[in-house]
Length: 402
Image 1 (cartoon, one colour):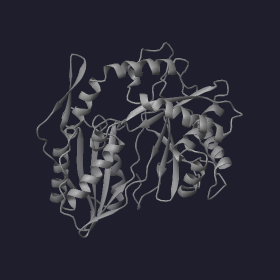
Image 2 (cartoon, one colour):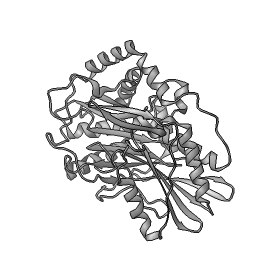
Image 3 (cartoon, rainbow, N blue to C red):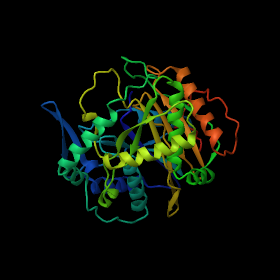
Image 4 (cartoon, rainbow, N blue to C red):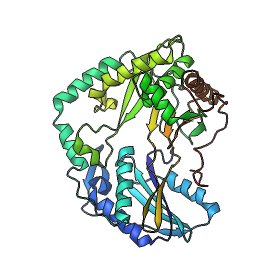
């Protein structure tokens, strides 16, 4: 899965832009964050980090035509990064005199979704002429703080051992096979108005995240009728201290959320019990569960995932130039993953899977079940749920298919 560990940040700039100014902005952001100057070396079978005092910013500029843009972005997105040299790569693509793209692709060893938002905000601020204050904490400070939490980690380990002990790998994933090759994806047409959906979720005492994840778990349960305990992996930002809100690094953690669901359970009941389970696991969310003792069963417990992405920041302007974040199409390391994406007014959904370990008809059935469960319970703009039968990526953005 080439590029599965890449985290691409793609910025479209409309207006006449000096590439040297953009390179200087990247240089300022890299200098501010030790994570972006960290290289990784393997020594005696262990991966070690080394923070470089400075890292030169290379920003090769290329003039391309509109027809070549999609291919160039796809190549940039899929080309692996060697974190032993530098944990990121930057390219400048000029499509027209007043339209260009900054491709700033990071290795997942040094970033997460929250970090990407911080980097975007800082790039925009520096391009606008601001110089943000020095960060009081770096990623190493987070690691030092975690090392001092020995007692907490032991408690977390015991908790997850007990919670996950009865859980088995998903029967939707072909056992004994490795996930490989390109990810397939289908958009799931939901017709969910964001404001209306938030109001509906709040009337039941929870959020859109809980509501949609409950529908996802229920759809998984329908496909596994003999397995009452189903689970999904949820990505959380894992920043329990205020100092960590400004730290760039791979702090985000994955939580396995198991829930006992029967085919007769309604979405309101599943949502209520899921909200309770999420509140229960939240205090233990800092633990890295892959360090738990190996299990005898084949397969992984985190093969099925759920991700909820907040709305991208709106376009922003510096001088005569407008800057906008472009939604990339990401590869997925999970065999089966549902991604929810907020827009300004709607909630979109994309199902991604690895065809080497998940059958296409299985993915289609899960997608249809998820759409049907939500349509039955949540007011939508279009109650007609179409069959999501086209293998495609995310929707085009201003003519750029990412």
